Image (cartoon, rainbow, N blue to C red; front, side, top):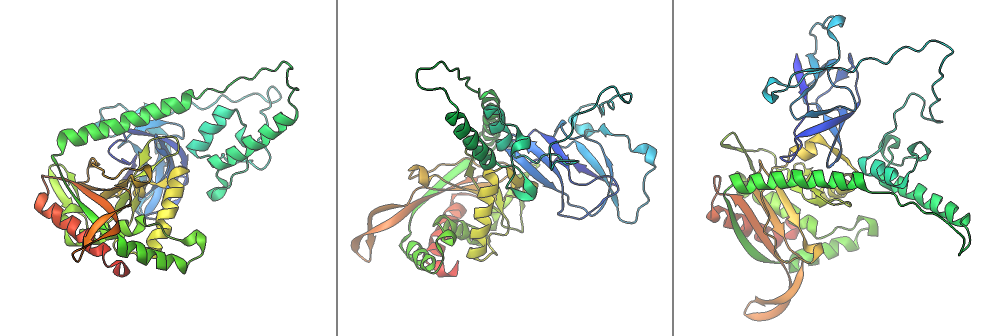
Length: 420
């Protein structure tokens, strides 16, 4: 019998709210299958399971917020005998290490005598189904006082996204405008407050701040930086994009990601995590990419096996990752598996970035914006597109010599973009 626990989805996560079970007791589960949805301050996360068997018992109800490490369910191994039905009482059962006593499940609702109260019927098309709503869409609907049962979702499995709420809000605005009193007539408009959004942002900033304070307190950072000539990479990318339809054209950031992933093969100690006083080198290169969220804050989900993917496939995965991050549809493995992070603030006009390592990783790479500058090539001064690259790394694991070799490898790889 194994435990399925509330996962830690980054160093800044302390608890999560169970939103939905995708499986029920008695259902078979496969390794890598999504079995639950959890809401954190950074969005709605699809949680995968990492063992194969049968979902035996559920210990946490949807809507309950529990700390990281809390046992959500038990998993019976394939072929093992089922537990007696009487043992299937729903309780919240945190691990003892959390120091919290188990809590009983909420009491069942009272049975109403027939003929007294008739519950309202579910909205059309929603019989027996719970609305699937991204956190961003739910917040916006609350702020705009929009009934979510009237919104048709365009996301996966009919999930309601922020864009769907925006569409309904626009339709409502047109209707209100058409029926509005003429100018000069009395009209009262009641603004909708954003208290929930402000509170969520406050929690996110506190979580990020706690993780970064821990990083600067515990990790002895060192920094190295270099300037990279991007002429060959930019020219190669332009040639490749001429062969593609407009929606499929790549941005130059993808060559930076691929170059970092390949450079980690040469300096694998930077592809590690620091756990319990030991650096553990990871066999897979999972590059976390910092993505700014529309309402503030950021996430850094992983591009799995970035060194082994063709650049076309990596670009498709990257676009999908950004889209799902901003609509609140990331998977738990994407938030927990990163072995190094890339942050780029070039689109914000920044030329040089000094990033902070995201625990338990031991390195982070920062890129500034692409700028045209005078550059010496073969003794002649020419104008070239340049980018500043910075590495922040953990001095317990590597030193400036190895860090410099890593940036030199990134530079060399970008001079041969056709081999990425």
